[in-house]
Image (cartoon, rainbow, N blue to C red; front, side, top):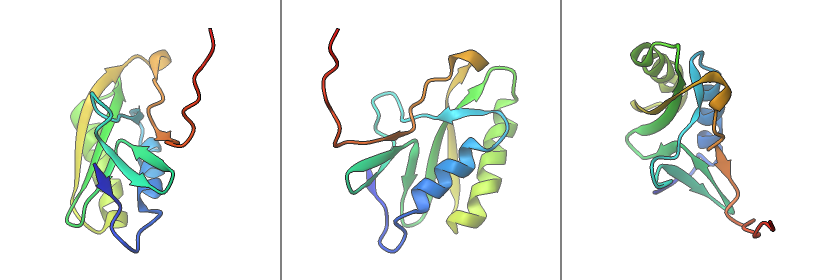
Length: 115
């Protein structure tokens, strides 16, 4: 878990948006237990971990897209913005209709749902 380095309060959001715009990326992925995230006041950006010396991005890739090339495209797009190395991990491969939205979570709104 990481808190975003001081002076960069919007970097995780920018990186998340840029990642989702890369062809072949289905969505960000928060890891098996939701452990990959940047924590901001009142919320977290799942799938993006901003550290002082690098950035970790975890994604789900669409089934019919080349996994390695998609990961490399994410890193190439993000490194100029991040200003540090970007390490991309592909956590899942999904069918186009099966995209699970594990993106930005609001940690303050945890109201139970009724069934």
